[in-house]
Image 1 (tube, rainbow, N blue to C red):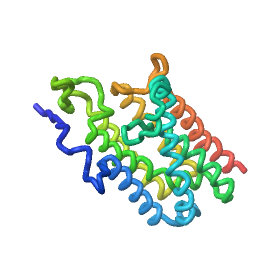
Image 2 (image 1 turned 45 degrees about the vertical axis):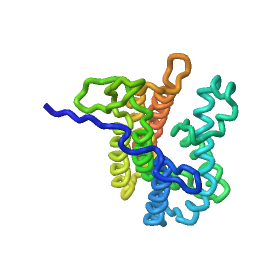
Image 3 (image 1 turned 60 degrees about the horizontal axis):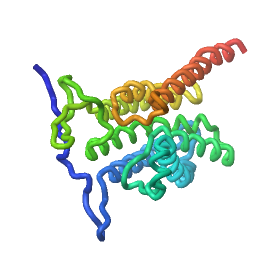
Amino acid sequence: EFYMIIKTGIIPRVAFSIMGIDIYWYAILITSAIAIGFLWAKLNNGRYNIKYEDVLDLSLVMIPIAIICARLYYVLFNLNYYLSNPTEIFNFRNGGIAIYGALIGGIITIIIFCKKRKINMLNLMDYLAPIIPLGQAIGRWGNYINIEAYGSETNLPLKMEIIESGITKYVHPTFLYESIGNFILFFILMKISKNRKFSGQIVALYLIGYSFIRFFVEGLRIDSLMLNNIRISQLLSIVIFITVIIFYVKKRFFDANKRKVS
């Protein structure tokens, strides 16, 4: 009978220290993902008429804004705790960021940037879209190292071992589910991006694919941000999935038929 138990605690959270400052593996993974993203952008310079130099200028603003929005999103849905502990709002090193907050902040930044630079917004989003799930796939391994963002207990052949209060438990390795899903999404987008059918296709497929992945993974997690009894990320995933499916069908079929008629 096949089974696989993923052990935790093998890799320490702190990779090394510099002058008394701990450098976490999570930070290294996120930084590596960003660096790979820049490399991807450089290799695809000129695709969809997007210049690498514009991406560099955008990143100077978008990366810090995305991080701030990821934190703000998390804080807003844990408001009671942070109102009681306001100094913890700025304690990024203690964890607490949300990818949907980063996406919202990133999209708003791109909209404003494109208006100022007179760049086609959908072209820029298509250019950047394949990089995002790759970065997410890499970053999720930080959750494994930190032993966080895991799921409920399970008896499935694939499970992760954790120890809570001296008790050994076996849980869904949701970090792995999402990482694998994002790697697959990256390769799909990378292939389709070479022969896209319309502006906005690649970013639409990313949003459809990621919202689908996140909806099911979120249902297994035990640390979801909640609004009453509703998992916020699941609700947002449904809204994004339906909205972008409508956009995709309209652009891919209805608008394409109009062009053929004209």
